[in-house]
Amino acid sequence: MERYHHLTGRNYTKKTNETHGQFAFTTSETGTYFACLSSHHDQSHYTVNGTAIVSLDWKMGIRTKDWDALELRKSEECVNEISANIIYLRVREAYMREVNDKTNKRVAQFSFMSLGLSITVSLFQVWHLKRFFLKKKLI
Image (cartoon, rainbow, N blue to C red; front, side, top):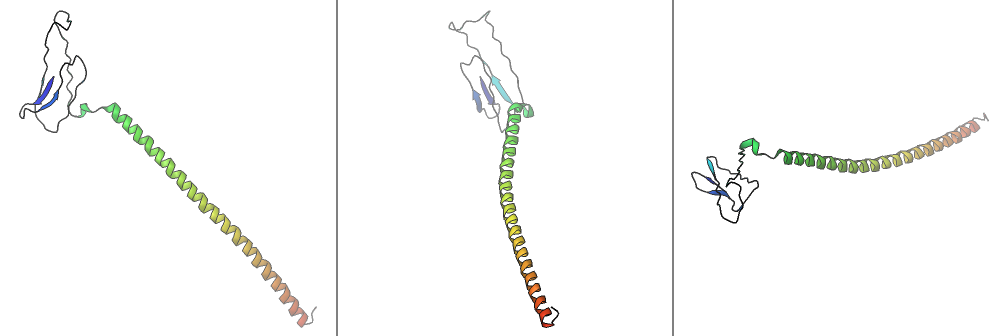
């Protein structure tokens, strides 16, 4: 089986001694293409009534796409995207957990510092008021 361009005479596909199968070719040139099929009868092959069955299914343009493979690639890309998104979310979750832990630590430190400062100020006020009242001889 041969396929060639009628103007350039360039062969695109050539298969010999094939009894069955699928054959495809893709070109970047527009034009008319011919397919030449030949059957050579010899004594080594058994044929019934000397007939051969040839089935041709020509596809051009969008019909040549293998949509099952495209759907599989689309699904694979979708799975890869979901997986990458999950990894991104895990990394982001770890970062947010780290920020949350640091913030909680700082809030706890600030709370203890505020409590310590409040106790110090109250003790100072008690001392000051006691001293004030002792000077005024109210106590």
